[in-house]
Image: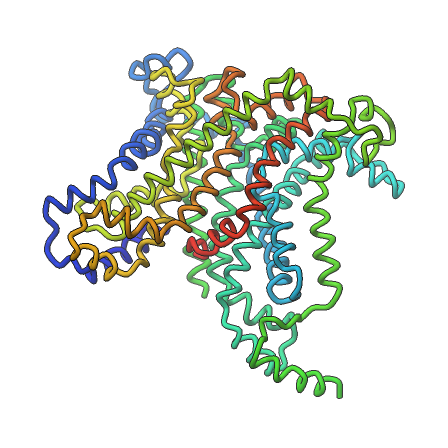
Length: 314
Length: 292
């Protein structure tokens, strides 16, 4: 999405560059020499796989084809047609949508609230708070999922132990089809709120103090200056975070893998997890590639729509 | 009355250090502290759990502090479960991936930011287009490729696909674009070729960005899961996250003490890196143009 803008800026830069002559073969050689190591690795392990996954998604590629990929059978759009009538895929898609639709706004709103409190609400211990909230962001999701599964354990977990103290018998969070996904969402929000906070703080630092002074002279209170100065000035940052967080959350995998194995009753089965199961438990790798591509298209479309509509609103 | 008094008291501060002015009261501190407790709580629970003997997980009601702290969980982890090996695997992979990124990404970043050459726009477009491709897409083709190269269950199999990435190019190019052309031109006039300019002029200025890139790449690789889960199928090639997830979903899933100790081993190196390099990480996020 950012590609066109950057390429354009790059063009403008070239016009002002001191190298006035049309670039000749020596300059091409130098440029490619710098680019070569990256481009070779990028081509083999990123660009070609993205293309081959597309091709694979039109084949019945399976375990027997791994040693002889060329010999696989093309089946046309069969994988995609099958996906349409695969209830498990729809379940996974619905679960992922649930995770995104609840998780993304919760993460952004909390992140914004904390960023605002740290930038404008308090003056002391800012760094300490920032470090504390950022802590979970850098830690392994697998480790965190293992810890949270233990926290949520109905018999020996901390959460139900605390609930017991106030006389409530807590549920078996992760074994309950209604509560499992909300539990995973809570954990994801807990882990990612610090990232949103840091990005929002960076955005807030770029807002000229004069605007707040003007608002305050006009008699604006704390809430009003947040609404009429912070929010509009932060719009590009919020849009960026919305896109980034949505793309990240659409790829939900580790949390259900470790905490619920996609259960109970597929209540936490995500699209990426279903792709993994199809590709590496059942070895239907053609089918799994189709799942991956559907997710890719969803990611691209959502990012595009978020940019297009939210940007034009301003 | 009070409103007028408040406003007149504000006036001198406004012109001077308005950014320093606290708008909130004690309750904001209170909320923030409660939030911090929520953030740190699970880590504390992990640490305390790792010190509890197995028998303590069977008592009801469960304990918060370990009654008889023990290093037994860690001893089992390192003695019986081969965690030193997983730790070594994770370190080798993360270090190699980090070196690859901080060597190859700035090279392309420089070529894109400062050199004129045919194909530059194409490469730029291709690299940036992959920034938002879901990681799952390349998983199956890379697995097939590695199987055919005989690299499944090897270090190259775990490392090669991650030696370069679009993020590093984006980060270094953005920064190098801001380096004044006059600086490079001066070196050119002195007769330096592009490789010398890159190595002796550009790289020294870029060190802070490379530090950020290095730290973020290391953390990303250390924590990565889906790809090593597929590519390391023999236990001797497990990375820490793969080992922990395998134990947590397999035969050791009720062994809470051991799993908490495993989580500590996975999390603590990262926390140390974070505390040491906190500034680089958060500054990096602010300077990458991540602002959109």
